[in-house]
Amino acid sequence: MKKILSTLALGAVLTTAGSADFLRLEMGGGVWQQTPSGSATRTDGDGVLDLDGTYTSAEKKSSEAYAWLLIKHPIPIIPNLRVEYVSISDEGTTEGKVGGMQIPGSAPTTMDVKEYDVIPYYNLLDNTFWITLDLGVDVKVVQSDVVVSAVTGFKGYSSKDTTVIPLLYVRARTELPTTNIGLEADVKAITDGTNTMYDARAKIDYTFDFAVLQPGIEVGYRMQKIKSDDGEKSQVNLDYSGVYAGLMLRF
Image (cartoon, rainbow, N blue to C red; front, side):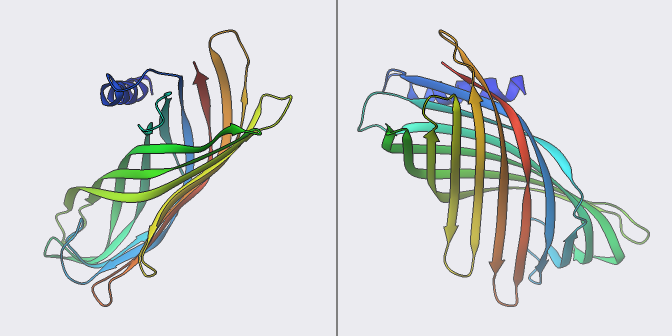
């Protein structure tokens, strides 16, 4: 976790150095307990799996790491910056052809995904009457590592892929007056009516009000969904959702 936070902090500093003075720096990290579900079917033999068949999630829970960093500065014309990291793990089975090889029956399959979000955003409201509202664009970099295990008559297959997805970003937050409690929700989403991806969260946090450093705790719920339908070529409907909890630090 320390390495992840350090990497995020360095990337954000290099991006904004020389263009703005820091006004606020926040970071956090913790564990997301995910429950995956859904399936993916391809019939054109390309994509991450090179698949002519179906992957079905076993809906097995897993606990994965997440981290985030937020930088706000006093120059209105330059967007603020939020950087995020999260890992996703899914296990299931694959049937059909993979990499041009026919699977007898089905083969155990694992998907390990790393997501990196770079989010330039503007404050529409900045703690105005205890309300903050942000609007921006998320550049989500998705790195997928898929392994289809060997079974009798099938020697196994693995594939790695990197995809960049642009998403709209909206965040709302309220600080409850006379308390150190915050309520926050954000969503990153894109859709054309048929194909949809979103990543949504809602949380409650508590900040300990010390002189310089302000540590805190956060607990929330996160949902990710990928849904696409490319006619007869591919149908994807995958969900990842569950509770997350972690620590925060404000400067």
